[in-house]
Image 1 (cartoon, protein in one colour):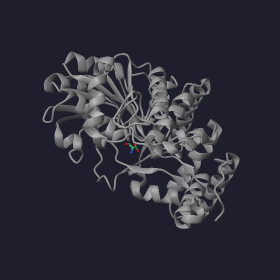
Image 2: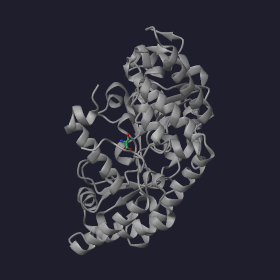
Image 3: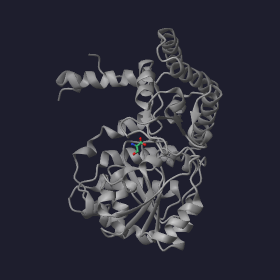
Length: 417
Ligand code: DSN
């Protein structure tokens, strides 16, 4: 067996370059993070070779005695971590987790009520171009003009429309989500309450965001955002939904589970149960609040006037700039953010008025509130002086100083090329 660098230097080189990009830049896309070396190691292991369709103790293939150990540990840890009666650790990704949750409780053509994507929701919460907007009748809700959710409006829509499923959770909402209030509205109107906590899962288990259980019926999440695990997903639920969700995943939607990723999820859940994870979650939010205050003190506009979680949404209209331009400018100095629609955006999804940025990845590196002030002032200076080469040089120096102060994966060695 030859190693990657020997056999395929082109791919090995691209991977090495990606590692250096991650090391040398400020990663501020709020849905990204850096996994531990233990999680990284588990992902690159031999369970990838194994077919394990079915569930522990009930597989369609032989030879699963060790796979069952991994998956059972992942299930038991997930249940303990989230205080859930049931867990399914097989969804490959967040979209598949949501698809399985809907498939378990709703027939095609029934009503799905979810937050509209341009308002901060997600494609799988009913966007017309997603399976969710194709298979189901969609009833969208949004935020008010001030960027905040209005639970009275959500309740009024749900009472009028009587959806089969009310899904809550968001991809670009900087405030706390009252999962309990959503579940109450769902149950008052006869709907199943699903919380997609992908963005805030790490904050939820770290006690820095309200918890969806025990009120919510089904909870879906990715595992790679604030939860800081492998790129994958998870479904949790009240026990009564377990059998239907198991069937929705297999044979409903997926084939062989990725057991190497399930092993890595088990490691992630163990890490998230450590007392230090609570401190991590608290620091993500503290860093985000300082970053938001710094940006606003510099005169920049944040949707809803700040943040209560790990992310913020900047409205660039007053700078006479679009999200695309801001994303590219910050990229030039080594700061990675993503262009994003803002609520009531007059522009288009691929050319929106805002950017979305957050603190989970920088907090993993060790950035403090004082560092976030420096980051905020640097971002503001670049955005306010888009044509100044001096500004860009200064910003690159700041980025270099900070990334050297908090080295990423200093012990990770790939073969030299
Ligand atoms: N793509 C994810 C995000 O960036 O928020 C949502 O699925």
